Image (cartoon, rainbow, N blue to C red; front, side):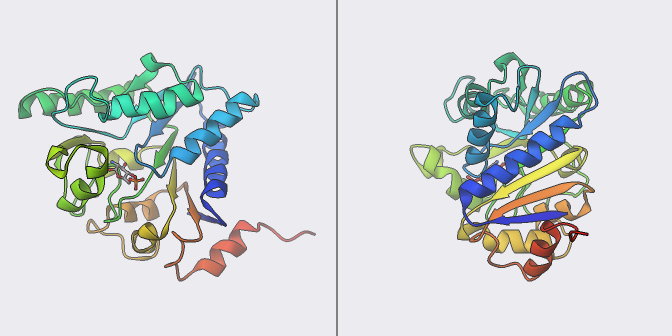
Length: 262
Ligand code: GLP
């Protein structure tokens, strides 16, 4: 696990963008597959990728985008549905083609249809050859995607109930707290672990406890983001505020400095 602590959120976003581009450059298949998170944490990273495109350092024309999760019950085209969010915040910013964006279909009405949508989504990811780089944020309760505390560490894409905390945290995107959907479709922790590289971005002191628990606490379903410890290629990009609870900070900084000059 590589833990990079930057002075502020913009520098953390730049480092995360570099980690994403580095991971995509190693993609083996004909078209790279980029896993996309919503939320405010990766917005700076998406803007940094957009700048890389503008400067000719990156090109997402052939890249497939794969969403982490989607709300259940929002009608197609709802502005806060994650398909629309990703079209606005990623596709139009980095030039990823909308027809290359895959999002689980949470608009279907009953449990059977949702379970089929979840299985279809797993099959879609497999048909693309798997995810090369998965971008992640972290919930203040340690959730990853919408895998709430208690999620099985080997879980696959499925329907999940949102926790009261997550619904409160996401109420800012809806007219009122009661308008936040109660359920979602989310890639499972096992699905996320299958990605060849994970890049997590967390900024601000509201994430400090979750980051410390995820990186330095036990591997446990009570802190879903602790599965990052299990993955062989995880890059964690933090600002100082989000890193405030880390005990091994000096070691991370020393490691980031690389080998001594000879
Ligand atoms: C959302 C998303 C997660 C995201 C998290 C944190 O609900 N489903 O993928 O990482 O919550 O959001 P934010 O970055 O806005 O704090």
